[in-house]
Image (cartoon, rainbow, N blue to C red; front, side, top):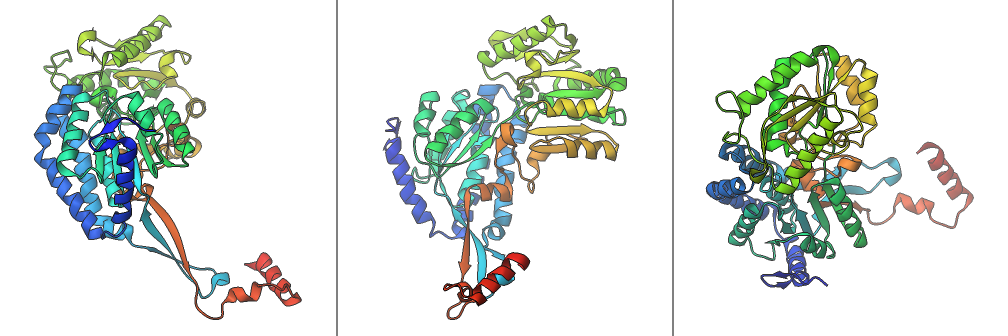
Length: 475
């Protein structure tokens, strides 16, 4: 079946070892789970330098940005688990209606079992170990599949896991598409996948063969709406950060802007200034700028370069741009206006440092355009008009929304994170991540002796029929 080797043999053998371990973990206390997770948090902090070197080697991220976007979200997730796991794992008592008089009910959160976590390349450390913390908090075992597109980080993840965990608890399998295909043949009890919508469909189809539950963190074209009441300086600063952090290779980055026609020019001027100030050096961005990372590989570089060239050929206007250096996977930030809606850049998720700006004159235009596209992972509104904010929130759909800022919702410890339909299935982070990796098992306890349900047992006399008739009408 699965023939790719782990340290202890085939994937099938590894899976069976983890399955046995997962049954033993059911006897483990919450205190033991927390002790392991706390120790792993200290282990991560002790290895910050190794993490920084690996991620920088793959993406040329600044070390400070690696701490901010890779290390911090994981240790913050750990601290949140340590503070709250006792409460999350406590059985939830459920009130019973009158027809269940005499019973006691609760929901018990039990581990799902053996879990597969498939991580992406854009935040290769964060989006591998973040879900792992939720998985361990729920009492499961895990096999991690890091992205082959970031080989230095994947190798480090493998090394760190071997240094800290026993293989029957957490293991790493490196490899490409063939490896992932073999992993997906195994009857995992839950799969957590982060990546593109196209691959998410493949994962979900494979999971269906074993009726495996899934959490799919996908993407889409996240719109950013700006009206004339917005603080344009704030909007430019926050959009510049949210869009061009990690070279725009962020699933919740603003994908395109819809701005009220009257403030377009002022906003573009401010945005260019803020991009240079945040990511440039001495007022400009070039290939030597230390605060600006790189596109992950030449395949993605060529895809992005092709999107820009096609848009320009269709008479889009270049508002801001600069050099591209293919051998360095370097692309200067690009701002485009007057982009035709049929251009590929308005149909595909961009996932890079290119920002189309469209204008509108009525609220209906905004709502109709957003609703004409697949439901996005995130939606951003920059406005000081509550009526406008509320209408956009009410009449459009997105996995998450943020008003007068962007990407902020991802790091909020008490909010669920996830998409809807094409942008994802299921939620993660904090309590919601714990629930994703748990089976919410209802338990009903009936009293001994006489029970109200006896009144409904056959034979169905006139009295029983009368009681059931009352139930149907009134209860």
